[in-house]
Length: 221
Ligand code: NAP
Image 1: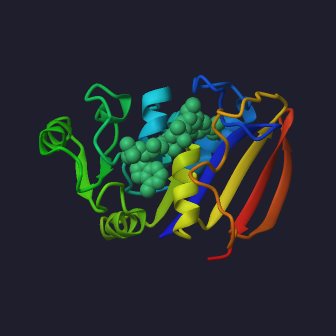
Image 2: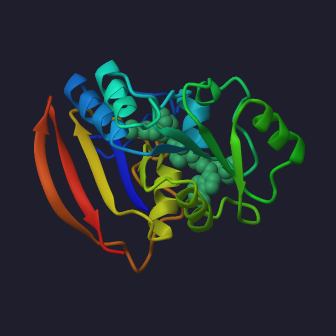
């Protein structure tokens, strides 16, 4: 599976404020780039923290891109994937609105009642990992479901978890012209942080977009 991480951060490296509310960091040109990345993916993934904070749809905005997918024999929208160890996704979350197939990755600690509720809401549940989602195993299972190209839209906890398991192949970061600050504000990669064996990246491209810049990196796994 090819895993592409995309996120927008402020000039000081924050994904949002300490209140964990969605902040507009990029502009229309970058939204369009992200829409194309979605359209080029089999699935789009976020952590449950992002579902709870932003309630994203993760669907494609541009009707022409949806039509092009349909013409290629693909679903109109890529599948949606949420890493959610204990099922904190609310049953009325937008990712469960039926506009795309939704996979919920859970751990063995997920309460069976909650799993049933998600299945009733239309989600396909994949379980691996004792207390936390085992990303290596669940992504391999997703590949078995035909998901070869996975786009990850955040947040910082999930992105760190993917780097920790050496699962990231490409990273796109839009760096926008804002300072958000705050020691508790989410950054591109949170988690426990690395103290050694830091993942190394290779710079593949730099492009000025709107009033910021898109950095494109590839990861050595
Ligand atoms: P997140 O990364 O979306 O979700 C983190 C949660 O995912 C974890 O707390 C964990 O909850 C679950 N998870 C399950 N398995 C995991 C694993 N193996 N590794 C890591 N996480 C795992 O949440 P976040 O870091 O709090 O980020 C949310 C914030 O980022 C919001 O403020 C949102 O607005 C912002 N955001 C910004 C962008 C951007 O591009 N600027 C993009 C996305 C989000 P459980 O233990 O309960 O499973």
